[in-house]
Length: 519
Image 1 (spheres, rainbow, N blue to C red):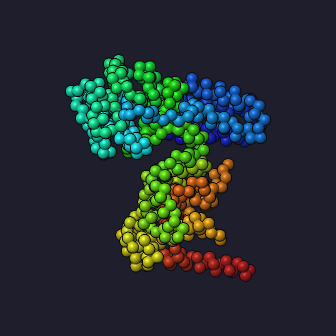
Image 2: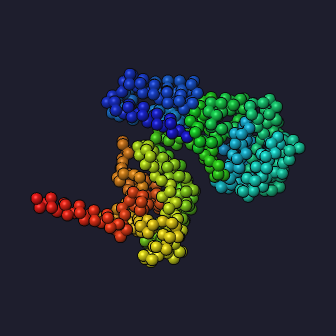
C-alpha cells in the first residue's frame, strides 16, 4: 500500500547516507525529497508541512550533526515522526463490558458490511467472543442479504431484518436477541449514503443514543484518498467516532489517507482491509507501518501470520520430525499450503528486513508463484506411501508421477533431489550438529549468495535466525527456497536427461581444453 512512497523515501535517504557530514544545506535538500514523496502519496499538505518542520528542527540539533552516522540518525528521526503521524501507539478495541457493542458507519460502498463480518471473524478467533451481526441498512435489500450470507459462512447468528423495519428499532431489539442467543459481541451494520447527509446523521445519532456502543468505527475506502479524511472529519463531529478502518489497502491506494487521518481527525486508524477474504483484516500498528514505509520490513507481522497458521504443539512436533529426518513430502506439501495462507511470496519477502530492496533490484526476476504450483502438482501425483517414503520412488515411479502431473521426469527428479538436500540441511540446523552444512537449494530467479546493499548477510534460508523458533520449517515456508533446481527453471539439469547433442558439445569442450594445456 506504500510501495511508491517507500521507493521515493529510499532514494532520498540513499543520497543522504552518502554524505560524510550533514549540514543545513544537505538536510534541506533531503527533506525537500521527503516532502515531495509525501505529497505524491496524497498526504494532506498541512500535515506534510508540520511533519517536515518537526523533522528539520530535530535534524539540525547537535546530536544529529555531530553523530558518526548522521544519515542513519536522520532516518531514525523520520521513522519516529512517521510513527507519531500514523497514530503513535496501536489503539485496540474497547472490549470492556458485556455485551461489546460496535457500530460500523461510513458512506455507501466503503465496505461496512464486509468489514463487519471480518471483524466478527476476528473477535471470534482472536478474542474468543461470540459475535452477533445486525443488518440495519434497510434502504439496500442487497446489504441485508449480503450480511446474512456472510454470517452463514462464519457460522454466527444474524438478526432477521426486513426493509420495512425501522433501523433504530432493529438495533435496540437486536441487543435483546443477542442476549437470548448467548452472544457477547454485537456488530451493527448501519446505512450509508453517496455523500454526507443530514437525514443519515440523525438516524445514526439516534442509534448511538439508543444502543450506547463502546466503539463507533468509521469505515472508509482508502482509494478515495483525502476525501476519506474529509468525510471522517464530518462523521467525527456528529458521532464522535472511536476509530477508523481503511478498506482496499491492497489496491492502488497511495497511503495518503492512512498518513493523514490521525493528524486531521485526532482518531486512530485501528484496522486495515487487505483483501476480499473474511480473514483479510489486520490490526494497524503505526510502528510496523512506519518500518514498512522506510523499507525496514515487518518481522512481527510476519511472525504473527505464521503463528496463526500453526499451533505451538504442532510446530514442535514438526521440528522433532525434521531433527530425526522423518520430515516427508506429505509434511512438505502441508507447509507449502500453510505458506499460501500467510500470503504471496512477494508479500512475505517484503516483510523480511532487506528483502524488499532486493526484490526491487531483481526487477522482472521475481520469485515465481508457479514454482510452488508445480511442486504441489508433482507431490499430489504421488501415492501416500511415496509421499511418506520418497526413497522408494524409482525410475518407473518417477515416469508415472511425471505423466500424472504433466511435468518432465527431470523436474520430478530435481524436486526429489532438492527435498533431500533441504531435509539434510534442516536436520543439521535443528540438531545443532557439526560438519559442513549441505548446500542450500537456490531460490528461483535470485543470484546465489545475494546480499542487499547496506544490509548484513542473512542466514542461508534468507530469513533471520530469530524467526525460526516455534515456526517450524522456517515459518512454514519450506517451499520458498527449495525449488530453484527444477528442470527448465534456472537450475541444474540431471545428467541422465541430457541430449546427445549437449553431451557431444561438452565432450568437445573438454578435448579442446586438454589440447590447450598441452600447448
